[in-house]
Length: 378
Image 1: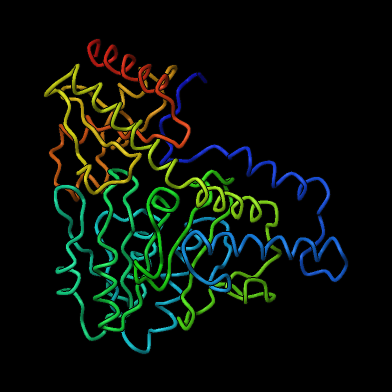
Image 2: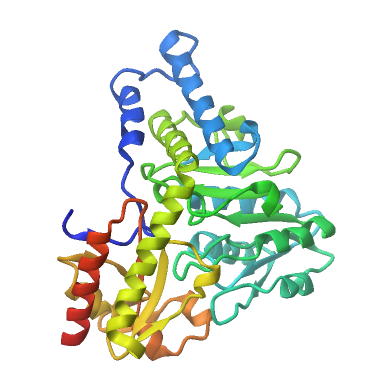
């Protein structure tokens, strides 16, 4: 068992050994520019196109609808700002939700300062958006709806397919940030009825520094960057071949092992929760609706325990994250937990524990003992 036990897979994932093996030749030998006409350039171009096909397979789209970026934040910026600028002659209204990642929320805030009007929808006690409220918020000048597929803090899965029905009927562009869902739950762009979808490589056992954006064929988007013609001009600049190859392989592995990985993440999470509840009883407060949640994510508060103290106390043995930030002794509750109307005491006691595809029973049982000992002491 590796020490400390890592249970913060929603923050980032280690690079899968198969992914690393696929990347190494493009570090050591295939260093040519993909735009070059000679062999080591052409081989890199072919590797990029192979990766594009691998990503497309995972989310059920055409390879030509995949655009590689540096990260999910860049993908979200290209999607949201690109659609806003391309459709500003039709309207200036954008709809989002109160539980979005800053990579979406901050983009919307920026556009709000640039003559666009942003409607931020509330969520229920589990962080779920109501499709009817989406429908009711739509106006004649609405040009874009952006709602995440699954929340990074509490794991709540949004009714993207239902919202997609509404956007199709109203002919409004629909974007979803699927950074946390790809590889964990089914993420089929046709079933979800989305026009744009964001992928983060480092949440998927690929390296940091690579992402992708799905843009449905026929969706008009304005370029934010200008240069040569790479990625059809949507994301110009010499391609990051090494990391692109890594993302492609990660998507191939995720599709191949999907059911096995999903089952292991869920079994590990549920084993952890059952162990904690059986020993701590009503000291455990579950923030998520586990019937509508990512299979690996547990957002839980331990009553009368400060989450930051707990995470710090166990950090030599187990790595988890908290649902709040602590600066100069002051605790600030996350916008997600605020939007769920969680009371301050519960929110300040909230930790996020996220399992991975290779989490073991030994790691989970060890974590249960570490957490219980720490909670009793604190």
